[in-house]
Length: 178
Ligand code: SF4
Image 1 (cartoon, protein in one colour):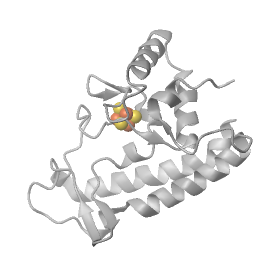
Image 2 (cartoon, rainbow, N blue to C red; image 1 turned 60 degrees about the horizontal axis):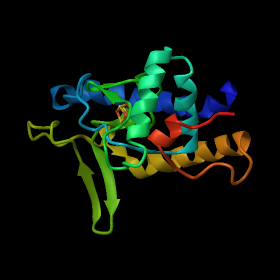
Image 3 (cartoon, rainbow, N blue to C red; image 1 turned 60 degrees about the vertical axis):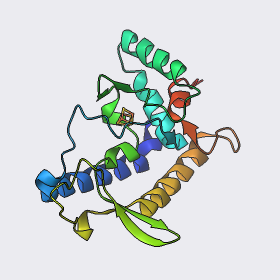
């Protein structure tokens, strides 16, 4: 099973490098830090992200798993609520957090019918600085690559039709892996 995540892990490393390089260049205009959970809303995941995070739960202490399961059950029908993995403003599975979580805080290029715009967290760039293009994340390109990585994963891990296209994080955390 582990080699099925090779492409995904390469992709995650690339995103993490982009974040680290951007954070170094943006300096104090990026105030993201441990303890800020402002971006941590309930997410929809691709199956590759969902299975990766679900498998990582197997490595946790039983009492942490029980707490995560309880939080996932509470938020099972709450797609607009907070993330079930956010506990005391800390991510309970931070090392295996999904793709979008690894981009939190970065300036994001958004394409909409009226043209392109750059979105930033209101807590960042309070100096008025405009982020340089090398540190702006193209979210559409990111999602296209993630979809391709996911397609390879699902083709090797599931029979056609056996897994939904996307699933809520709470549903992923409660997923039966048998
Ligand atoms: S998985 Fe972790 S980093 Fe991502 S939204 Fe949830 S708590 Fe935040």
